Length: 116
Image 1 (cartoon, rainbow, N blue to C red):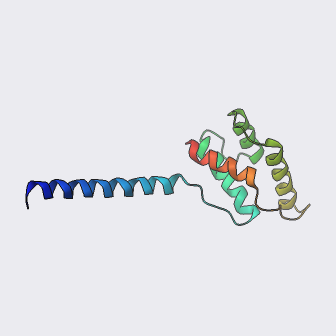
Image 2 (image 1 turned 180 degrees about the vertical axis):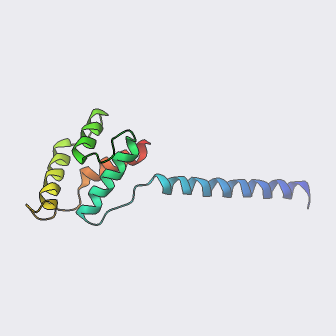
C-alpha cells in the first residue's frame, strides 16, 4: 500500500470511530420515553436524581420539583404541579390515571436528563 492509501484508510477509520462515539453519547443522553403515568413519573424521579445527585435518599417528587424550580428552568410549573397532583391522587386511590402525554413534564425530564 502506498502512503496516500494508508492516510485515507486511517482518516476513514477515525471518522467512523468519531461517528460511533457521537452516536453512543447521544443515546446515553437521550431520556427514555414512557408509555403510562407510572413510567412518566419514574422518569421524573430518575431525572431529578441524575440532575441533583445530592438529593436525599427517598426524596419526594415535590422535594425534587422544588429543587428543579430553584434552578430557574423556564417551564409551565402550574401544569407540572397539576400533573403531579393528578398522579398522586391516582397513586393513592383518589382518582384515575392522569392523561398522557404530560408534555410539560416530559420537557422537564429532558432538561433534567441533559443537566448532568
